[in-house]
Image 1 (cartoon, protein in one colour):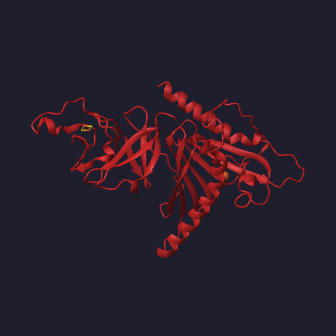
Image 2 (cartoon, protein in one colour):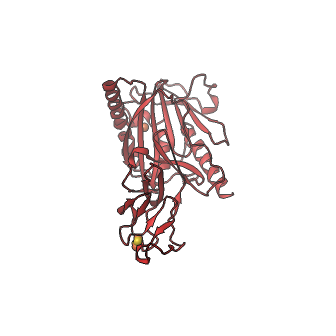
Length: 329
Ligand code: FES
Ligand SMILES: [Fe+2]
């Protein structure tokens, strides 16, 4: 994990009012719940009294109640009641549940993974997704580290093989570039933009990334650290993926299909069709990616890379930089 980042971890509608829900995210058991006003709280799913999962408990007013001995905790994790000590007794301060800073936007729940900050960075998002666009989401579980799932979406040389009968049809095995450019480097809205120039191999030489002219069109793919990606299919059509880390060996893919068709039945139909196409394509990817070893990517993991792997290298370098940056503060 890259520390000190906002990670998309859930969709807002996965946490309803009136019922706590347990999840595993970033290798930790967490419980998500809402108070009566709908304010979201995400905390460690572990009662500090005797280690029971709070997600098995229930909500009492604006507190979560542990199912074992009825201790209650508020949204900031402080214990407000120890029934066995009596209502008039002040609960011990040590009874505190770890909470995580959270935000909600674009139908996603973001969690801050790292040190608490005086001022938090803006949430990762693609501003090019217009307010007029609607989406439908599917979730798919991949048994791999989230970095491998991300790299797969930056990998353009797999297209004619993994997707030979879908998006990689046409046998364009020769890869020029690809061009990978970082935008706003060093800033919070840092983007990795990618342009694809695959073509049929007629015996010509492939061009290396540095031999490619400056692209004069919008990128085909964009990645936003730490876990958000979009395929810019058209100005009004996008595939978006949030690569949600469950733990070191499991990732939940939140795959959205964005479009602008809003008429009631057509909207659903378009959403289903787009999502189905996304599912077929990403299942082709999943079959291969979950076999990669080592399961987690990094610089210097012994892979023999070629010029077409350029975007993977850019991703790995920036990822390492962000980790080192966070560790040195
Ligand atoms: S274990 Fe939670 S109240 Fe005792
Ligand atoms: Fe793919």
